[in-house]
Length: 383
Image (cartoon, rainbow, N blue to C red; front, side, top):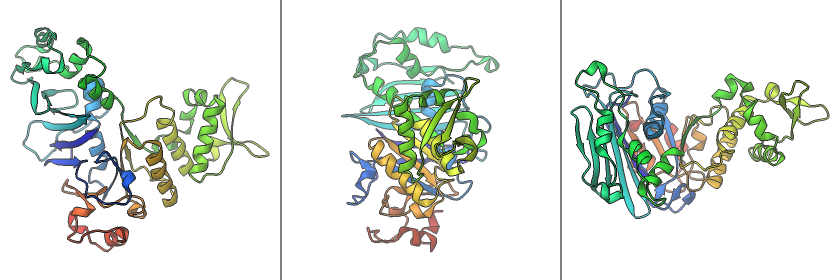
């Protein structure tokens, strides 16, 4: 699992900001927010333009670095506009069984990797300084990768001295995974499996912009009666009482309907909240793998607060080991009945992330009304 993520000089985050998943406070309630001593369900609050979406993009950067190649989806300004630092720093600390792994790197942009380093149990396995053409590969035998042809790798990234002709640097970790036969229990394979299953979803937006997105592959999935029933059960569990039917039209296209005495077209009549739920289902539930980390940005933007609670409880039950980070403005969710003070965070305008239990001099207990404290200004210092 991911123990800690640290970021610096990325977009609106000039100074270092960390998400420390190990920093728990020992509460004996809402224990389903903690897995193996690590925070697995987290809710982040923040005023508009504090960087909640940017934090999610930064967290997902390891997925793009290891598997995205050159086609990164994030465009626009990369480095913080007020910083004099030349690169953005990303650092990920993992725990895989009894081993601790740290992977950190520095970027000038989405496409320009400047430094890269991997440590396992405190030992530097490799480090690459692409800008100064300095490499360290002395401990590859520690991960049973001593057969790696590092000279071949260095040749592939050597693009000469003319900065105008610098080519994109393939991360050595990515190259290593593709060019060395690693055992299934290799810690690098565990890292790759975790990073590959990281997922960020801005719930609701895509379906609302283009309801017809459900056609084609998703409707083909719903041709399986069990899957259609699963979607129906999901909506019912979320409080949307309905029955669904998928019909094939004369032109061969498929169309989803609410089943009544007369069929009612789903994508033309469903509410924004229902469409947001189906979009979450479409992008998450049918996958053949469970996510390792899920970042749900403004996940409840179209939900009634009771439905938002149902979604959180569903995620707890369906993905108990997945590290789920949700962002919200809904203070109704700021309750010990659902979360707990060490799993509720405030992201400030200055780029600091503070758990509620560390944002007040009071000792927060199960009986405290966190929402009332928040609205009354108890935590204003950290916003």
